Each structure stands twice: as C-alpha cells, then as structure tokens.
Image (cartoon, rainbow over all chains, first blue to last red; front, top):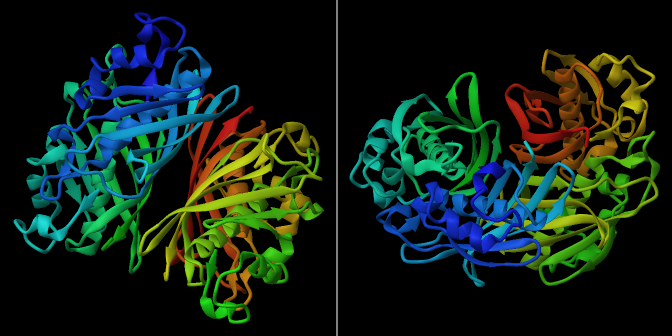
Length: 149
Length: 149
Length: 149
Length: 149
C-alpha cells in the first residue's frame, strides 16, 4: 500500500471510503483483482473480493491464491488508516503479518475488515481479518503503516 | 500457498523447481501474475515476476501492488520448502511477515529469493526477500509453513 | 513457552489456569518476574505482572523492559492454548509478533489477556494484548503455538 | 526497547556499543538479566546472556524462558540501530517477530546478533538471531524501530 495525496486529487479531500473505492475499482491492481467497497465505521473499512477465475491459486483444489487475499487486506488496512485520519495523506505499509486459518475456495467472495486501532504522530497500527462469513475466517492480519514516508 | 501432492501427479515425485514452475506458470494465480523460475540451490529457490500493467498498484505513481509482490514471495517460500524436502508433500502457509523497504515501479522485474532455513517434523521456517537487484531490496520476508496440514 | 505434560504431574490433568498459575508463580522465570493469575474464560486467560524494580528497562525514564512484557504475554498465550484445549499437552511457541503501542512505567501493574482464537490438529493461533487499563494498551500480540512439537 | 538520549549523557555522544553495554550491564532489566557485550561491526552488534537460574522457564526440563531470550534480542536490535546511526537518538520498538527454532537449556549461554539492515528517515529495520553456536540457532528475529518517536 503506497499512495500519495496528489493521486487522489480527483476525489474530495475528506476521506470517503465508498467514493475512494468506487474510484480504486477502476485502476491498477485493485481493478485487476476487483475489490469492492462494503462498509465502514469511524476507524474501520470493509471491502470484498468477488470471485474470479484468475485468483485461484491451485486449479485442482480450487483454493484461492493467498496473495490475492493479502492484496485485499493490505488495501483494506490502508483504507482503514485514511478512514481513521479522516483525510488522505501519504502512507506506506511498513510491515504486515498474516496468519492463515483456513483456505478460501473458488466461487467464494472473500471479505476483509480492517480497523486502525492506534494512531501515533508517525505510525498507524492496523488489525483485521479476511473471512467468508462469521464462521469461516480465512486469515488474521496485523500491520503497521507509516504516515508521510 | 496451499497445495496437495495429487495436484502434482503430472510432474515427477522428486521436486525439481524449474519443472514445477514451468508447470505453475500455466495455471491459476501464478499464471495470471506471470511468475518465472530463475534459479535454485539446496534449500532455496529464486523466482521472478516480470512487469505487466495489471500489477501496478497506484497508476499515478507507477508503484507496483504490494499484494503482487507478496504473492510472489509466498509462492517462492513454498517452493523453497519443497526444494529443501526434495519432494512434494502437502504444505500450507501458517503465517508470513513482510517488511517493505522501498517500492518497486512499473517496468521493473521483481525477483524473490527464499530459503527454507529450518525444517522440523511439522514446521518449515522460511526467510528471503524481494528485490530488483542487490542494491534495491523491496521487501524482507519471514514465514512458517506447516507440513501435511 | 515450552512445556511438557510430565512437568505438570503435580496438578490435575484438567487444565485449571488459576491452579496452574498458583504453581507457576513459584518456579523459574515466572517466579523471577512474578506473574499472577487474574481471570479466565472458555478460550482466554488473563494474567498480571505486578511492578518490581528488576523489570525497569531504562532507569532514568522508568520505562518497563519490553522483554518482561513479552515474557508475560508469551506465558499468557500458552495458558490460553491449554485453556482452550481443556488439558495439558506439550506445546511450544512457533512465532510471536508484538506491536508496541505505548510504554509502561515503573509502579504500574501490567495485565495481559490472550485468547486462543483458532485451534487446528497441530497449530494453535493466539491473539491478545498487554495493558494497564482499558484506555492504556501497551502492546498487541499475535502468535502461533505448535501442539506436541 | 525505549531510550532517550539524555539517558546516556554519561557516555560519549558517538555510539560505542562496548561502552554502552558496559554501562547497561549495571542498570535495570539488562542488569537483572545480565547481558554482556560481545562484538560489533558497522551495522551489527552481538551480545550475550550468560546462564543464571532465574532465566529458566520450565524448571523440570531446564528450558530457558523465551521472554529472557526476547529481551536479549530486543536490546541487541536497539543497539544495532544505534550502531548503524553512529550516535544515540531516541528510538522505540514498533514491532518484533520471533520464530523459535529450538529451545535453549539451563547452563547454556545465549548469544544474539542483530543487524540494522535498512534505515530510513523515520524507521530502522532490524534482523538477527539468538544462538548457542553456529549449529544451534534458538530464534530468528525481525523488527522495526521508530526514530525520534
């Protein structure tokens, strides 16, 4: 997750995750993977990755590529940081840890919900997960993002 | 990274990372992203991700999506585990940590080299990095994979 | 966190975190640091580390040593695994990630609450935090433990 | 690892890991655990934790407490950051990941060697390990520290 505020001149300075993701859906890797906005709160954002054949990691088993899921949670974590900030500013992922709890399969829509649970002057701390539904959590994630890298 | 040995019936039981990746290049998310085999040693594998427009994360800056890079290192880490084992057996990523050191840009080929530095009866420990060349390391990675999950 | 069931012959086979910690308080590094049992639920345990001068990391600032806090959360995470299992069995920490949110200071009692949020046949996934009170979270932790290493 | 430059007024402004650790040995948690300076290079520091009974985690097996080992590598990682900087400045651990490869036992001296492999304006990236000797690596560590938190 690397972004600079000038990248977003086309959308309002006050961060609106729905608008942001409506735009992001049409550009770059997010467009290639097909993220969708789902929901947000004061310090969290929820996104989804509807199924498409290119995100299958192992065709014989239909297991989705872990990389596609990580891409989703990394993007969702960055959106949660902007949501907590209430505005765009340049951020970059410092590090990310994923714990894989169970695979997701072809045909399933993967959801991600990330919360920015702590913000300092320079570092934003994020945690969240990727899931199919409440009973089927795919991955747990924690990460840190740097502000104005 | 989730795979089962029956998925690989088409290639020899003795693990050959070049042959494996020649096959993997044509299937699933690896094919979508376009991984290539580069090199290997006793306990490590090197792979590459040649540039393609779909892996750009932020079109305005040309920064590559971190998710595409994570996909590459996760796949490379799994290949390193099979390389150290000398054979296929089912493995799954337990957890993965990435530290992002600098962005990669549109037009650059990202390489990943992962080493399986420790193997127990049930857990394989991997470390490595993603890089453009020796002077430009993009990410540092450590992870654990479970054998016969 | 490394333990073997025979180590615990002196206490009942059914895991009781209070009894366990009453015993653990008198042995080894736990005794040196002075952990105390606080509370538990179906899949979580809460422990505390009352202040003592030896856990100050930087005498001039009074900031507690991060290592003492990690020791506490690692022990608490292991107890959460046994609590979820409902019995002792050999476990070992595979890996642990800590995010430091703010320092703890001389005179403060550090609490840790860890939950075993997912258990497979071979791996237990833990998350939790160290805190002074609800408003002052010191560290966020995630980790994996292997069963019968 | 939290420190402020005024804490170190007693030693020269140019960082000398040997002098630093000679001082640190006599204060706080480092003194309680008994760290010793071993060696250093341009961007790395090596420290040791000679055996003492209080660092045993499980008396019956003689396995050393993982927390004591983490304390050592966290302190060693911080020293590596100062070594790379060539001077003291306030730093704080942002996050730390440890992979446990094998236990250390009562009677063994644990060594830690950490390298600051990347430094940005605001973040220092560290990696290293804890070991008994070259054949017996106890833990692998990666972490990030923030400058001037």
